[in-house]
Length: 131
Image (cartoon, rainbow, N blue to C red):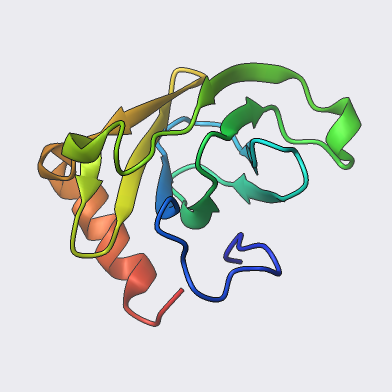
C-alpha cells in the first residue's frame, strides 16, 4: 500500500517523494508528518519491504515499533525531512525522490548512487507492477 495523503495530486515545488527501504529484521511503522502537523502518511514495512510517501517540506519522519494503534508503538527514531533545496545531493532529480534506509532502528538518508545492488533489485521488483 502506498502511503500518500488525500491531497497528493500535483506535487508542490517544495515537496518530493520518499522511498523507504526496510533492511531491518523486524517490521516497523513509519510516520511522515507535515510541518503544521495537519497532514501525515503512515506505513508499516515488513523486513525487506519498500514503500513510498510524499515528503512534506519542513516536516519530520518518525520510526516506531509497529502497533495496532498509533499510540501504542514505541518511538525508535525521529528526524527532520530533507527538501530539494536543503539536501539536493541526496535527491534523484528526474523523479524528485529521496531514498531512506531503515537499519539498526534508525532512518538514514541515502544518495541515489549509493543504493546497494540488493536495494536496486528490491526497488525494481516493487515498482515493476507500479506502486
